[in-house]
Image 1 (cartoon, helix red, strand yellow):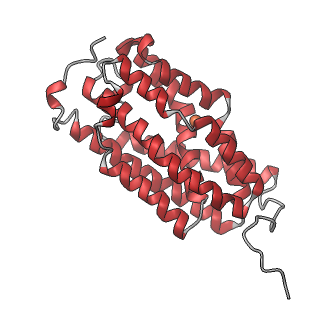
Image 2 (cartoon, rainbow, N blue to C red):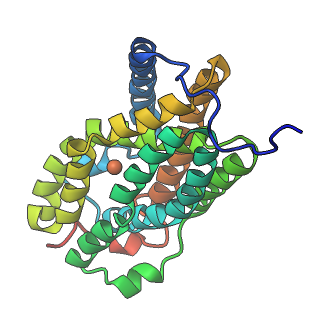
Length: 256
Ligand SMILES: [Fe+2]
């Protein structure tokens, strides 16, 4: 009788992508994301709002609230992803566990910055996440049940790449508009991404999960789909704040 054990990650131990192929694919993926960033600025309403001189108070606060919620909700799905990754690749699971360890409590950094602009923890907890955030969380659950963990890890690569590339510029602008002493949480979050090489860590996990050309095609598609869901969030945020949604009455500059 043959051994019935499966899903322990001991097949395909040699990565499909050797070091050179991995570097080449990563450059190609980075180019795709650079193009997506251009589309982002061209199509998402108020995409560069936080990089500007006059930051709307409601937009700023609501974005921090949603960022903390997104981290809280996704860490549940991302923890489930660890199980699926471990079934496929022990190496990828080790990298992913380390990455999650570093990110796990980062919602608190955003909650700290909310307190600096007068939003208490209780107030934060009273705000329900946007539908787009719930749908993003639901998409992760769908992926883990029906397509596998690659799409979940792909999301982190997109976010980490974009953060390392764009967050420093945004933080320079926020130092002027909101004040350096009020954005300490966001600064330390950005430092972790850059100093712990989060894009590199997530890429290492992706490399172990990619087992053929179909996975490469899927990765490219996931990056586009995640961008669409994130764009829906920024659209929702814009409608709710800058465009005169229910928080429109708070439309003063961030008072600090
Ligand atoms: Fe990060």
